[in-house]
Image (cartoon, rainbow, N blue to C red; front, side):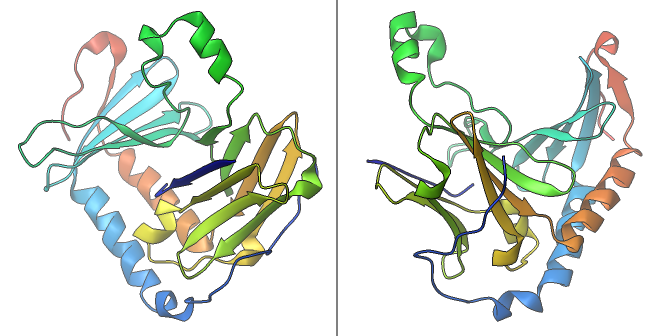
Length: 234
């Protein structure tokens, strides 16, 4: 049985096996948290670079934490978001991907036979759209009616399981945590096609407003081009 968790065709909704509400406590704090997160983004040191059709933005927060985002230059769609923090000794850690294609660990040092063998394992990634948070789990060959996808309000996560007990995963939505917004079961749906399970969660209006405000803020950041050399801090 494949069992994983993360701190990070037609559609359907499933609620099997999830429990707990824990919803009301998050409602009142949501608006204040949205404002607080936006303010932290505004005050972070930001650099921007236009390269290969992508607008790359780097954030440095007062506590030393770093966030890097990449947007499609034309559509404005978020393609990559990743985080990096320093260790207690001040050394830079590895980038942790929140949105975008996962990096194959140590792929450069592995032989082609090993990589080919592991291509059959499920691959989990997040790839958002304008209106939805969206996750894709590749290499899941089971028919659609085998999957259950639901919200666990108590643990504030989405739970994926199969009735044949071959796959289990739970993952959070960091955006909702940062904005202190509740998870809504009715916003969750999933589809299955070409051995890929596609899970969608409709973005609440607070998120859409915050994302629009952030784009306005990013337009104020001077953007260097790849031919200009290093980009400059705001």
